[in-house]
Amino acid sequence: VSLFNKGAEALSSYGREEVIGRQGPVLYENEENAKKVMRRMREGDEKVSAFETAFRAKDGNLIPVLISASMLYDEEGREAGTVGFSKDLRERKQAEEKLRRAHDELREAYETLKRAQASAIVAEKLAALGRLTAGVTHEMLNPLQVVTLNLHMLIKAPSTPPEIVSQLREVEEHANRITKIVQDLLHFARHRPPERQPVDCNEAVGRTVDFMKHDLKLNDITVEANFEKALPAVSADPDQLRQVVLNLLTNARDAMPDGGRLLLRTNTVQVNGEHWVELRVEDTGSGIAPGHMEKLFDPFFTTKAEGEGTGLGLSICKGIVEAHGGAIWAENTSVGGVDFIVRLEIWGE
Image (cartoon, rainbow, N blue to C red; front, side, top):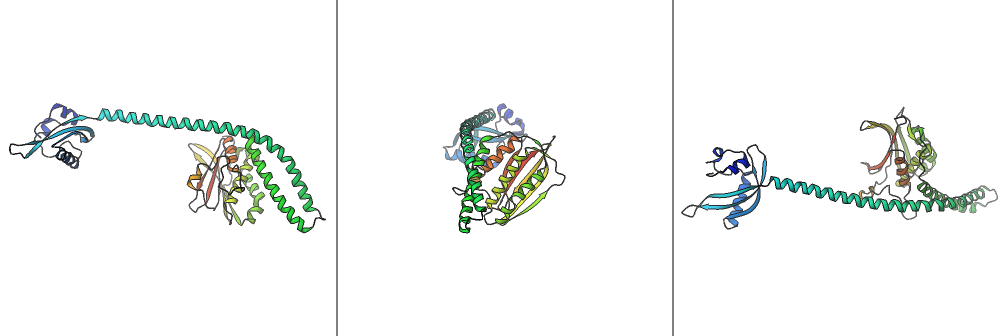
């Protein structure tokens, strides 16, 4: 180096006396960067214009620069060195970074607005659907109850021939299924606010399991329970809590058509300094496809075959749990099943 002006000193923090007379790349980030500039000059008629690279200052910090340089030759035409000018790009880079962040924030704001608009449209449609559904399902339940009651009486009647009884049982099964669908639609439409009281989560889960015990056994599903002793009471509507558990157990049963294991766990957890009761319902089914996970709690979304589900069970669970100030989500397990997690507020906290 034979020339190092005050601008170069200010840019690099090196003094002129520290640089003059040194060989090789003095300011470049590394030797490879210096060689790259030399190659660009040789390929560009012995010069390079507005080439972006980086210098390393005396304190070790990298400085983005824009350089223009030309080759120097001696009287015999041999390469004698280079002469170059550099422009500090730090302010421009900072401005570009601010612009990039502003662009990202604007894009995120735009996406948020689109999601909000979509949610508002969906909410309006669901509200209208809810009002229609509530009226229709209420009118359907009364005649359905009459049908199922008469079917039950015919099945139990001594005078009914055995071959007719089997047919009536099949009709009764379909009628019960219709009733369940109508009840799900009604629960979805009503959105009744919870009537909270202290509830023993272990007892609520245990009673619901007892209710489904015969059904689970028929489907070759074994139940394992791991309940935390002295679990604090949760702040919940007992009927709505049991409905959440029933829906989760039904969902787990349907996920294991060839049988399997159902693991139920309760425990207290601390999150961000707050204590919660956590309920986990884990099955050994086939799990949830990654593309379906984000839609899992959407109304009317189902992976079941047509005619086998309304897609309302998990949506109802989500609505109930969130109305209680809690949270519900699902995770695929390491063995291939699904673990549904429900987090509920503790009574009095």
